[in-house]
Length: 115
Length: 112
Image 1 (cartoon, rainbow over the protein chains, first blue to last red):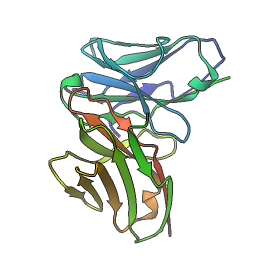
Image 2: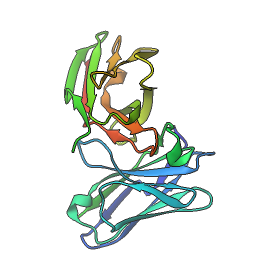
Image 3: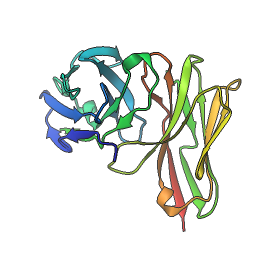
Image 4: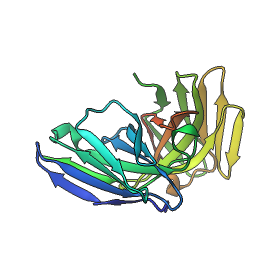
């Protein structure tokens, strides 16, 4: 186990709704990255937070937003859910932020199903 | 644009055999190349990683071979065991940015 926890484990929403996913990073880690993993595909980078600031964003629309708190935990918010948002959402924690290449440790993910 | 291409998509190997997974990348700014193992319903777990100043790295039964000029790297799983049955992902990251770009994954099945 990596020490990265995510909640909830599973979630079912309907199209147009909003969802908030949560992540607690591994102790001592100040950087959180979020990834979306569609079924049968590799994870895709959504964005990264370092010291409560967004540092880097992948090819995702603005309805994907996030927060990082002073204790380095993080939230991923998705507005106006679409069917294609159904995926496993992974949180990964690391140290050093965007300035140093460091190993990222993944949580178990939140499985989101949009109906 | 798929910056990291992984092959094969799936692999069946007998217990005790060698599993070989290959990846190719395009961006020469990539500076860190990890491999992750993922079981169904779980998040990816780091197996082994390499940086481009090294051509090979071995940890237990897992070996990464890296060819900087060809922009390719591969994972060898020696003495494959049924417990190795999982999906394996290669990834790459730039020195600045620390964002992982993943390959499409290889589903490995080890038959007893």
